[in-house]
Image: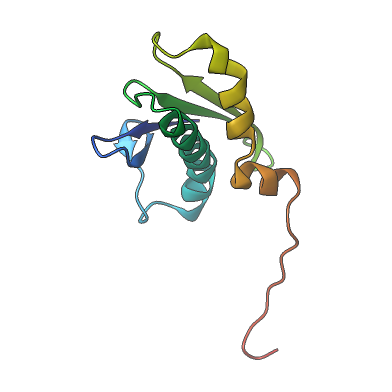
Length: 120
């Protein structure tokens, strides 16, 4: 499965799956998966704008390796498409900035979940 995240004309983050815009009405699992790419896009945008570089032609491609037997994502790869004009000197720095994504950090060290009802 692939999720592509782009920036619109107002530099807003817009995720797509199968060329269809992902919205709040999509499945919770798709929203969950998209949040990793959107988080990467958020950190990429902050990095790029702080250096007054253009966001045009910057795209995040999130590839999810999904296990159909366990119904679990086994690997999430974040690929950052940068324009040719992007300064090579920032290549490792933008990767480090994106690695700070809070969604990624939570997936690396997941919280525990508790389920309760009003009858408990």
